[in-house]
Image 1 (cartoon, one colour):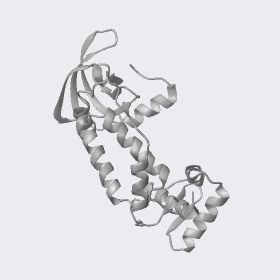
Image 2 (spheres, rainbow, N blue to C red):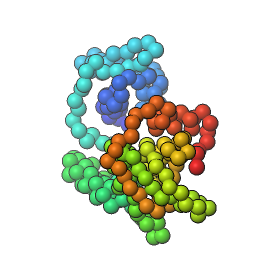
Image 3 (cartoon, rainbow, N blue to C red):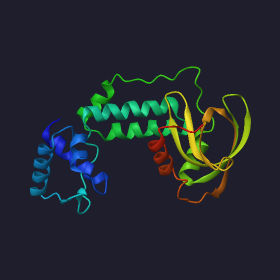
Image 4 (tube, rainbow, N blue to C red):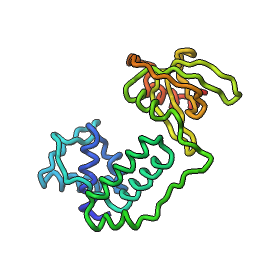
Length: 230
């Protein structure tokens, strides 16, 4: 990576979070801490408002606006492959959004980068037997708006059950989407394969933000136990 590109990326990383450690920045940029310190000093001398605090890390004193869409080749390819994965494996609305986003990025890129997009040989063909998940669009809305979901669900052993769930997040595992939520029947976190949902109804009611029942609490549980809940 050219040094100019690295400095630009460094500012972007600082913009993305309230504060970050030097070790995290060095890891993201794949450079040594010594090089990072020199880059931060040079940016500060050039007028970028970076401040550091022991035990906290680095942050920007105020927002710094940069020219948009300064992507390198690897970043462009990451965007292409990500968009094409969504086109192949997302619901129809999400696939259309990915197509539109990729078109916007393509049109806004400099000519040289636009040629790289056109020349990219990255493809994600959909697997023929894997249909688009029927309920993914409704579940994305439920997660985003914190709406209560009622579902008829068929487990792997073909047993059916009625569940009322607070949808917390959706996870893609390569071929299948999984919903993680707080299950009111089990009074605990549970995950559900979206393709096993037989019927879904999303309420207008919003579920409350309750400590111990958030997605961050689920991640904490996973970290502590190394397990998943079926």
